[in-house]
Image (cartoon, rainbow, N blue to C red; front, top):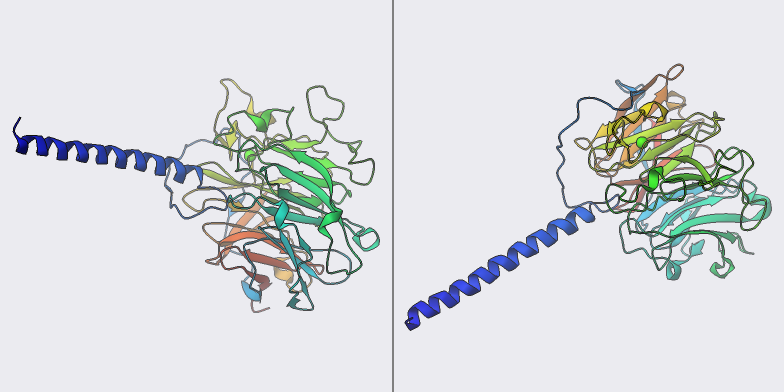
Length: 425
Ligand SMILES: [Ca+2]
């Protein structure tokens, strides 16, 4: 072999190794991109158009899509927040609004002004660097005014879910983070699908939405496994017993092989849910896998125990349905939309404020990628209609409600909050 040929083969060798390295890098990046295309981690522009199945496996109670029944606008309310993921009120007559920042802070808006010092700061306890981890929500006890108790949901430094209680301090706008009492710790197998919302129901019990624990497609089948709290809606009584008591009416209490905390099951990642303050109906927005986003509605006083389908179904369509499975026992969504229209549903609230009568009874929700403001309302019986009210252009992480029943929409990316109001009214 002469020196030129040897140089060439050497160059070819280097080139070959580089191509191999490049291919490996592309494969690695693709895997990472897929893994992180999660509920709060947009930006990879993953495939939006998918093959759509032509038949629903679970039957349909799907809402009819119509023109909006009112004109709605967004009024800039407050900004300057750092990755806000939730907003709520304390129900204590103070009129304050509490904004949850993902890193582990709760800020207070008082008399229209954001206080510099946070209401709660647990940044040192929270793992927030992954897109679906962090301080995810706060719920004030229905008698917060008397007892000062409030509850948070966050991922701890190991990435596990913590539901814990804090107590208001001397200064009503500041809380000592040392006074934490952990109510529930739930091991998380992966960084994604941690659920997020906690909320007191009209029955005074604390509801906790738990995602399926993550990875893809619910590999352990947690959504349908009654022996785990993952992939479930939980209901606990924080007023009786320590750390909590199982309410007498919980549907799986006393059933062997089932965790008594379970209120409903078959959830993938119910990031946001709420109760209609007038009817007690529960609205749950469950984030889909690769094709279907959904909103489910459970009538007030239903008694719980419903199976919402995951991972047998995604939306009302087959996902990992066993041969011959009778889907009649599964509760299909009221609204489902494909990934041609969004990527991750963000559940909101039913409007029951006084200021905008044209949207009374309308449940507002959105999508983190698409930013459309949708409304859903019940017609008669179990028939529903939904409509697009606005194209907001926001990356909607959550909605929130103040003491007057006014609703807010949160832009995660820009850290801004808008109030939803009827336009021209
Ligand atoms: Ca479902």
